[in-house]
Length: 174
Length: 183
Image (tube, rainbow over all chains, first blue to last red; front, side, top):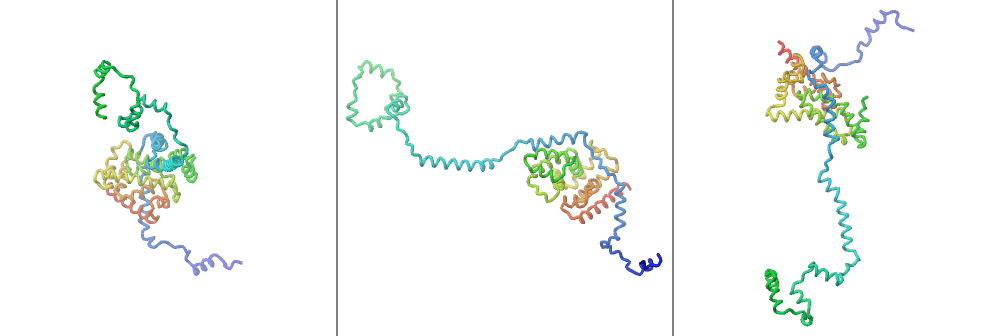
């Protein structure tokens, strides 16, 4: 049941009761409001475009330029990264090699006499006269057959034809 | 159709889709970033360089982007820093202050083929150039780019209250400058 008789009665009631809406404003809000309104009116009259412009196709072309410098750029792997990547592989290889060298049971086969003679004939092995003297006992050297002797003329011809440098080198070695 | 940021970031951080997603990123944001940069460096060729450097940095840094801010805010911040670094470098080469360098650029703007503004637009650019760096940024971002204060706060790392104050001071100085020019 409406307790107010008419609108005047309602107004009279409201005037006597709470006037505040409960809403608040920041301190000094109304102090600077004239300035703010004035500035807003000012900016309303400013141009909204800067005046700067670009060519019609600028934005079409810029994408490719950027892609050339990013996605299409060849990847550069730093030296440090390469080294770090290879360290584990190198370490593993060293361990395998170490184990192979120290624990291998396969003997190195000895060369046979034919192989040794071949090496001498092809000058793959050189032995000095001193080494020969050490290797052979005197009696073994005495047993060597010098039946293929040379007569004096043959010997003289040999000595005249031979390169002197060879003789000097042989004397120097002795 | 614009791709939403969350999806775009996921694609950018996935090596299988990074390339395609980066093309989409450039396509979606190149103009907004360009005009933001251009308003700072004035000259088109310089803006072009800075824009490309910005996208290169985005490409290199996207894998470590932690999404604590929006993707666009992050890119906008990179663009801002690249532009400021560029201006500082140019000013240092000339042995002058960055503000003096920018004002010098704007003085020559009427001779620039890539500026077709009228007299009031020219005066406005000169007015902006004489503002401190932060106020220039705030004014351009609020007035020309229509960014909200929340967005600007995320980009510049400044509180909304400070940004509002900055904008208020910027507009006041621009008003004084223009009124002095037109008296």
